[in-house]
Length: 377
Image (cartoon, rainbow, N blue to C red; front, side, top):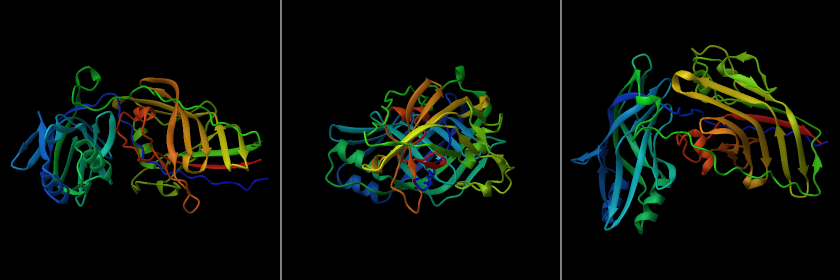
């Protein structure tokens, strides 16, 4: 018998719907700080692509669409451009997320990444009135964005550090969805098809079968509160919902809310099969069943099921089947697994086609729930 193994993966959870509500307002960035100085020292010019504007050192990004609930997602039109001679790097599909952890996402080329982190300012959200704001936030250019700029502009030095001071004022009109119920140009990214379905993990000849396993998925607490607004999260295909509990009984609560009602956060997934190979120290656990998240008012209908847990050292990951949006029963890498720390395997959203399930909302490296796995051979 192999001792039970506890696997816990911490993940953040908010799926961008295929449509969003019309909005107005702007995010303003008063450019300044070490990152901007390093760009100027290397003769890089910061510009804006309309309808974004750059005047007297202040970049203004119009808010075109958004959602406001326990967090805010604001989608901007226009783009941020950096130019050195004939070389240009353009950040498009800019998207501000305001919550306990706030940041600005963007697309550069074909890659979605986290452009700026937002810190040092209180976020004010009111879902009843659809308003979102913050004042005098510190904006810092992420390392991923700095590396992309350095590479594309062929700079000698990495332009890391502060990028400026930010202000947000936005109003989302929940009574006025975007035309056609979907995003308009410059609006939010939409869920795309998975194009990188992974192969099953190759089983070594020396592997032995897993006789039994218990797999429990603890979904992020703030996502459950959000996704349960119209319909309870549904356990499907043999999965079993756990008991409703207060948020503080969630083993990996991310967003404590003392006013939250007791809700179901955990789902036990039926064991299908598995194997372990002592020689390579690899393990694969396959499950059936899953969960369906349905929030019609925000365009969400997503089913995730049949989780495959691959424990392979530095390449460990979790694969799932996705249905909803552009995907019908497609397998994709759900999240990667880092080396265990204190018995915990932290997960992160991968780069690639399976990231499109989340409509570009997640930058590579963001996370999604927690899963416990115990098994015997």
